[in-house]
Image 1: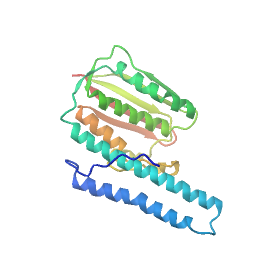
Image 2: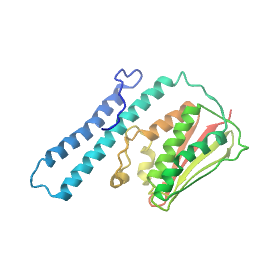
Image 3: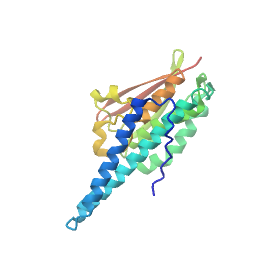
Image 4: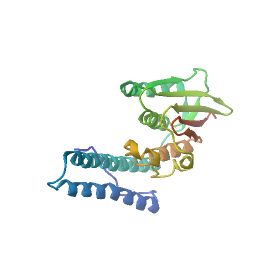
Length: 237
């Protein structure tokens, strides 16, 4: 049984256009699952084909779960905006702990995971819960799309009135035409299609929105087959 969050249909500030898009996105996995189940009824199905359709059902269930989870996160972000406290935070007190959570996963995949967060950096101003979520999302993406033997690193430095937090990986990368679209709601990177990309296309949207609400920003540089570098600017005053 898939553990799926309950979707609250009292949408508040969630725009009608976004809701319509969400409903369309949710219909696609259901259609694919129903098609696969119908094909599985054939008595002439070969074992390899049966396995293929079973994997399709699993992947589409994961995708739908990701869509619902992402939608719930977007709703929570919208509703929490006026209630979350923007406070002074030192990255050295937050980021190492987040990285340590992902060390077992990185080791399991044969990926080198590390960080450099100087102790003398000024405090940044953000909601700690959002900073943790931002780091979780970017680390998870980096590890997910980096092959065995690769590297994922987090580095922080001063950049004028901001602190720059960089998430760099040696993963599969993103094609140049897609880079401007990756923060769009529900956008799924096409060159990840063969990598069992079951994401909802909401993670980076949520990261950008949380940073915007903290007065920060995010940018990315990437090259196919080389890796990606996400740069976050967080205000220090």
